[in-house]
Length: 135
Image (cartoon, rainbow, N blue to C red; front, top):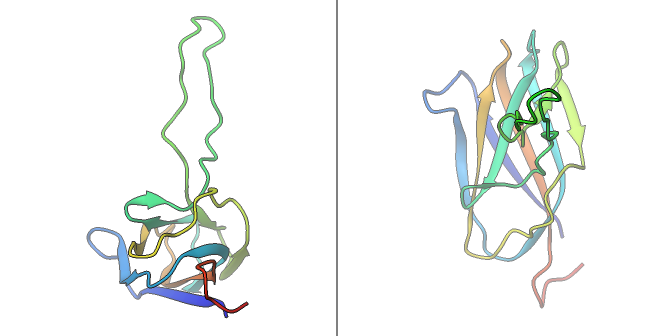
């Protein structure tokens, strides 16, 4: 049976952390992420979910090199899930890295940028992969 982790913040927190953090009792594969907002953001709202401090999302930053100087000008890694401006919900089931969520790890969510939105809920759906778990 799949497990659903739910993170929520009503207003912006000082450190961006959304409550709660979850301790993983088994090994899980990532299935889907869903984002909801009571008040839609006016610019893209960004979230990141971490497994023991490492983002569960793939790095979507494109490598860039200055054509004249040959200097690498690639920006910071972009591993965020996004709620697009003007939208109140987003369901994405992609852009995860290949790592499984290990038993004994901690999973938490951070609100990177509100985009002017408010009252956010983020859900992470997981599928157990540990031996002895039923499908």
